[in-house]
Amino acid sequence: MKTFIQGISYYVPEKVLTNEEFVKDFPEWTVEKITNKLGIKERHITTEDETASDLAVKAAEKLFEEYQIDKNSIDFLIFCTQSADYILPTTACVIQNRLGLDVTIGALDINLGCSGFVTSLSVAKGLIVSGSAKRVLLLTAETYSKYMHPRDKGNRTIFGDGAAATLIGTEGIAEIGNFTFGTDGTGAENLIVKTGGARHRKPMNDLVFDDFGNPHSSDYIYMNGTEILNYTLDRIPNLAYKVLESNGLTIDDIDLHVFHQANKYIANLQRRKLKIPEEKYYCCFENFGNTVSSTIPIALKEAITDGSIKKEFKVLSVAQGLGYTWGGVVLFF
Image (cartoon, rainbow, N blue to C red):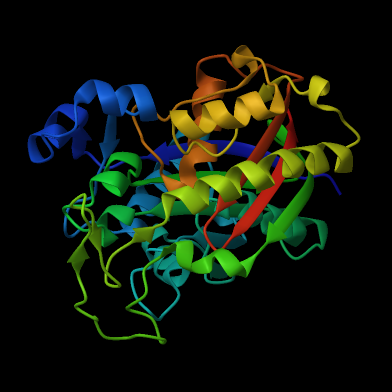
């Protein structure tokens, strides 16, 4: 059975952190340095009482309105986030109630980072192909800003909060092709928040600052940028070729590449390593930053809206995430 993306909408918080505002707290940085290196001019940030589920609900409501979706036609809800409202219960159950979806639907959370959209899309496809569902609502939402130390100038320049809603069914605007995945847990501690879960429930209060003034703490997001970059450049090219092979394609068959939108620096390195022409490599992180699992659906929506994706286009989407996890798929428009 064929499966399709039927529609995509997204929502980002109203609060915006611009580079101009950012450098007021970090005068050793300049607006030009951030923009030139990362390609990010602003990112949207949640308020203190705004959660990932709040963003997801608003994205879903936009989807329903934009595509005139009958909520009763949805029979499964997937919520991909690492910023769950609670340790328990499952946030997808909370969202089901808030959206007024039927009590006969299935609902689950998926805890994945930047690779989350691709993996969750494969789960949605599997539910439909197996006959377990006919229409799946996939919500991705993340609020990494809540887990970053205020003096973490590295991560705060990169990540933004946001959510996307994607509807998957048996007909639509883009057929979902074959997937390829990978996992390597040896890199788990290179992007991590150590406390808050069952392993370390209580804060460790072990904050220290390195010689460059960067904070290191088990109670906030820690990212080993060098290791993450090396892993990305090592895995993504091979992943891209494996995805293409699984779909019976070569890289020359792809009309547009819509990869995980990390930042300009990583995007340029990936594009050059794969020898992708600049006009075929889509980027839209300028006004969003890295929204983790929502970067690809937001980019797909933007590319559809601005005409970068046209009918009969083949689109390759690949993503790498913490854990480590990675995945890719070809979409046939």
